[in-house]
Image (cartoon, rainbow, N blue to C red; front, side, top):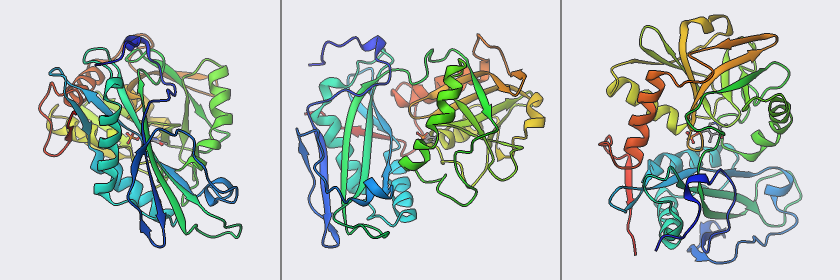
Length: 342
Ligand SMILES: *Cc1c(COP(=O)(O)O)cnc(C)c1O
């Protein structure tokens, strides 16, 4: 039985669900993981995740389809990205099948909290990899925790498919050119709190960061990738080694080309060139597609399509993507993984 929650107005906040998955890495191998009702982690005060930021996370969603079944969207891509992040931080990689199995188990055990089809809600899944143990020297841990928990969520940015404005930030960078920008690690986020707060105080949804080397190109939004649509039917998204490679972004590149017949391009988006874009948006698992009304840079507010209405191409991309995720539109091969219900 699905719980009686206010499914239409979930927002994006933590909710302690009955079950989460927990596995330990010890003596050079992963131990068998299991579901637990204990939502508190018990780790050494000397854990590398606490002192040196040796931690990584992922984010994906479970979707309720029209027939009541539950499915995941491209979890293999999240598994592979967590492995790449683990490699960058010298952490024990989580095998892909273990990752997907853990996500499925958590969704299944908490299936009453997967929002009903049509409510707009989804079950957000948060896998977390932490270096633990008693190591004070600056070196990687010998022991790790892999945990996966979940919560029902609605919109990440207020407004959903309503456009909002973003602030282009000159004074702060999210990541360094050869740093950890492409790894999904907490450290990239802690440093974004100050610029994020400054943007929110001025009424913007979030910050748009510039490329850290030259500050002439758009890099990404604090927690989502950027894309623009040109009048020539091109879908363009920035290419940079310090951007977090968004699975939503790569899915949209594919859909723009193969379903909407657009030219899909990963390339430079110069600040001086924003006039060529007739629409723009931010994309990510949490944000889905958030239309960008305008971007403020210094004293200049650049409006793409409209500050109040979503553009037609952005809407088509949104419908195609969410149609696939909720099972209404045929998915490209391998994009959907079903979760068996109990
Ligand atoms: C997770 C994340 C994204 C979005 O990636 P998806 O795979 O689409 O969810 C974008 N930018 C940053 C900084 C992120 O951490």
